[in-house]
Length: 175
Image 1 (spheres, rainbow, N blue to C red):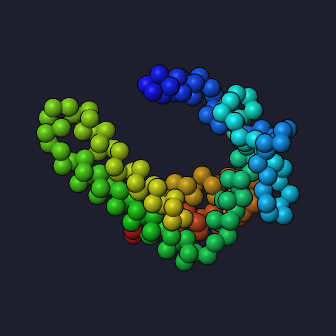
Image 2: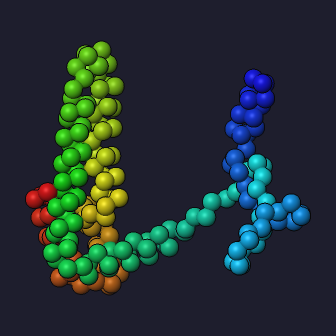
Image 3: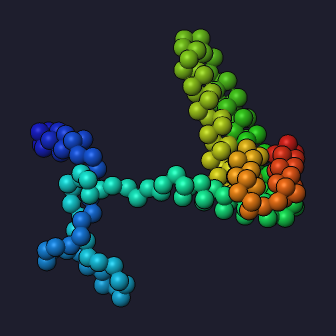
């Protein structure tokens, strides 16, 4: 049993991907019973070149950022301000979490100061940023990047840029 587990583990590590999706070529293919137009597929544990992830090219990513910046710039001032307050609260909560968890381990700080700093950093900003991303709140730093890209591409005006920056910064400060 141990040799089977270790050979399975080595086999999974040796391939570039654990699961690969291949177009169906045999009668053992899984077909959907609904009326959708998807082709039947075989799932195999082969990995390799057929399991390449679908990645966007950098120009497509930039165009998505420009579109997101234009959408953020066109939002009303009150909405940006309210979402900015939420983001400020999330970052403040993350800071509080970092201080209470990372700062509350004096034995670790005494024995291994580096580990205490890692604990301090691992509980602060990451939790605040995750809460901000999940809720869709407006953080000034993200707005600076996205709305500026939209302005540089001519998708928004300078007044919308300034409105977005002021509203999100003020909201972050209040939060």
